Length: 391
Image (cartoon, rainbow, N blue to C red; front, side, top):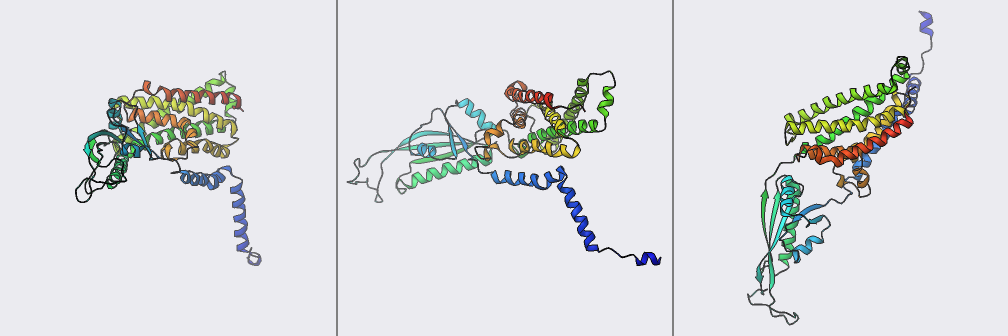
């Protein structure tokens, strides 16, 4: 006991500092820790910093019979945040208005003429005016607002009202009102927040399943020599990949079914054609998992162990999560980023999900998105052939 008592106790401050140093060096040597400690926050800051730098525009449909002249129309053409849609038929405008794809449709028509008067009520007699007592065309503007996009419709309506008030205020308001506004609301399917968010969540869940599921599986099997033992049996190598792909595809179907069911029954996610829409979305999930599994196989080929798989997987996943329109409209990003965002595989899957779920389109109507996903898949699998390692 005396020997123990006489042992010199270490300096506790030095011990704490030594442990801190060891932990710090361990973190720096761990790729996963480095990613989530430094690179991941940098991505978040960058994405939210870039949000809003894109020029958001509002589409305004113009009816076929509308006058495309006069101070009101000219003022609209000069507003940067407004894009006039003049090349659609009335039927197409009605369809897009009900779906909320175009928040407002306007009809501009003549509403008689007016003679400017002075404050005494007499016609103006200005010697500097080469055409005194001239008649001015009055216009009536009918604003049709979409109930399916209420926030955008209200914003556009405010812009139109502001333009009309500005024109009227410059036209001797005591005696003349050149622009007369009327509003009406067109009922349509309500586009809720969950209708926008859920397709992105579903796409990201499929991507995560494919990336981490198959990548970690193959890295672990190589590390523990399981693949080498399997090859001792009389089976073809491709059978191993096919088996894993079938397993992940089954998980993807169950995953999609759970997410869609909870979204629909708990949060009122729109399935416009009910069970038919559900099966269409499950079919799209299979196409998505086919493409995303290729990315997982690439990561499993590049990663040496479980610690290096996570950073590599996140390098592929995070740009798609933020730039694919899963949570933020692509139009909110700077223009130089938007072309990149529009060709990401997750963007194509998001678009297909939304068109099928909310607009009620069939699988055949989203063939361009499906074809783009398949092209991505073929390109990735060509890379897998070059990179994949069995041992």
